[in-house]
Length: 417
Image 1: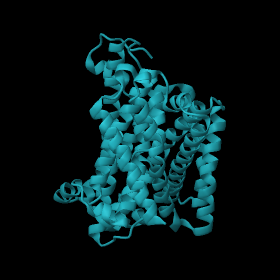
Image 2 (image 1 turned 180 degrees about the vertical axis):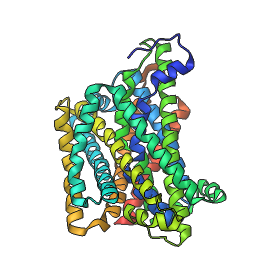
Image 3 (image 1 turned 90 degrees about the vertical axis):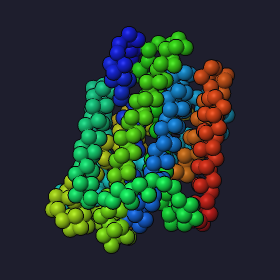
Image 4 (image 1 turned 60 degrees about the horizontal axis):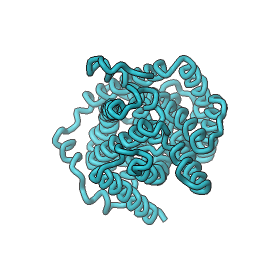
């Protein structure tokens, strides 16, 4: 979609708004809820700093992904196919598909839990019913990307409203929130805290969102000249930063609510969304508190399912040039997420869903370097990016982020095994 150059700032910004929000919903999926609730109930406000840093990291990396798509006309998957040998391409593709399945697993469980809490539908049936998400997404896709974006923004507003009401009820400590935003060395020293911190990073900076954003930004542009591309990059970056700031507020609200209601209410072992639902009303003294919480969860599950659908198509087509009908691709990825969810719920019962949600987010975090490293290398390659290649400070920050992620992943693996 070409956009006129002579409009006002706000008119051009409105025209560019959309791709950032399609990406941002992946940062507010039910996996974020599980890690945020566990972090807030166990450690109070202490892990708020991780939420902030993870979202700042996401803004930086998504800006690089947008720049890659705008400058080269390739999404990250297509760029990897053009640059890497077949064995490396295959490895990167499979790892990304694994990350998408882990994300889908969180969405399946989150939606099933919300249906159970709101309508009493058994978890097994709720998991099976999530296959109907395929119909919703396909219907919206057929109507056009603007309808999809409107659907996303509407659900995001519902989530925001629900959390605003919950926080008013919980009345969290502003001083505690301010202290929690400051990073602490204890986060790295404490294995339990680090595990949850990595879950927060995995739930926030999702690897497949980098592939998705590098493709979606190509739906808007001023033109193909160098000044046009610079202006397109500026507006695309502003769009994604605004959307991710919204995601930061939601993710922070989850931790703050859990800290205020559970940690300082004497319930420091709340790891399941169901436990949070059961405790919210009596702890806050408002009968509707739990219902509002479940409504926001359902909106979150429906919203974030869009990310997995779009990213799955882009990743498969980009890495392999293999095109599947959208309904078939969507059905396959959803079934691959439903099957492990059904097995866990059947074998271990509803109590295992919280641990499974957190584990899925740690898996996403472990996959992240395999998307970040190619992104950093390619956006710094002058043969691909020309004058838009990363400058020294951008390259330095990007390399540092990649190194930190790799080191943290190694430590998590050592602590686990």
